Image 1 (cartoon, rainbow, N blue to C red):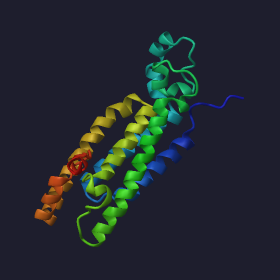
Image 2 (spheres, one colour; image 1 turned 90 degrees about the horizontal axis):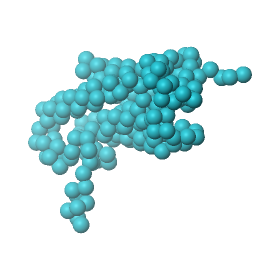
Image 3 (cartoon, rainbow, N blue to C red; image 1 turned 180 degrees about the vertical axis):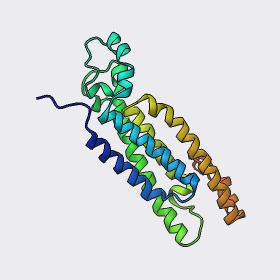
Length: 214
């Protein structure tokens, strides 16, 4: 008896809720701006798992081209949903290919960044202080780095037309949100935040301090 590859709507709901609840628990959106960003991330997650387990819209739209290029391929099997694996002509279990392994690493690192950053931020907020230790000593917005890594990981694992289009929009939204938070922190902490911002990049850590010590 063949196990169906799609139409597994219970898995769509369960997986979507896990990621959305996780995101909500660490972001706790308050302002309309926060809710828009959270809503966009939630839409990305729902779109992803809908195609992964529910209805493979991307595979359906590309079915004619895929069938002509890969005539021996069962394009509606679950393995074929790993499009990078298919398009690169790799064989074997797609869950063990380099991109899938890298995607898992990115997703796990993203989770760790979000959880670790939240603990530091929460402790600083309780003391009404700037979060400048741990991950916040390397970048000003490690939580947003974590969300971007999770989305990038899923794009490497299971790309879809919709999520590929949504990804740059979400990166843009997180960038705007980070810059707005920078302005709010400057207003609240003044020169202390300016000094912190001068020595700490927004998203991408640099090796300047290590280079100076060397």
